[in-house]
Length: 173
Figure 1 (cartoon, rainbow, N blue to C red):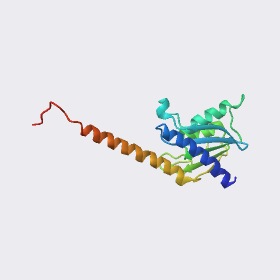
Figure 2: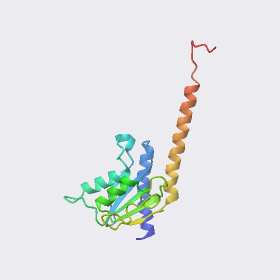
Figure 3: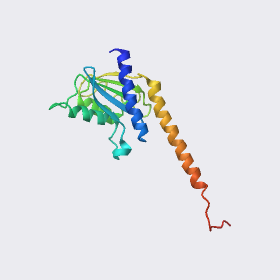
Figure 4: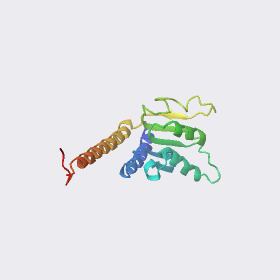
């Protein structure tokens, strides 16, 4: 596949990650492409939906499968995601029959496409799925790092505000 094309679609996945960031979600975004067209988009919505399965990949796979007009299979599609899929998402990728996965930043903690484990390679159902990692990795990792820096700063600010509230009528002996 063409590296410039992969970068173009990863930029679109980054746009989904930015939407997640703006909604207070961990900024992970995903797009699914078939025949040069985006057929589904997803962004992390775990907090919004209060659902631990509401990962960008799962939501995009569900949306793409729903558009299948009687066929949920995603043969001949590519999933672009800003962070390496976790085991749950890798399982969904396998079961949905996606042909290709392109991810941005590796996930050293839960990455299931080669970083920590590799669910897609040599899988028990012998489905071949092409995996390419590291596309726009610095940008993909950068938005996640920025999110957590903002989150830590907010928590620190909230903590300092709580500590500075004067306690009227309370004497400290």
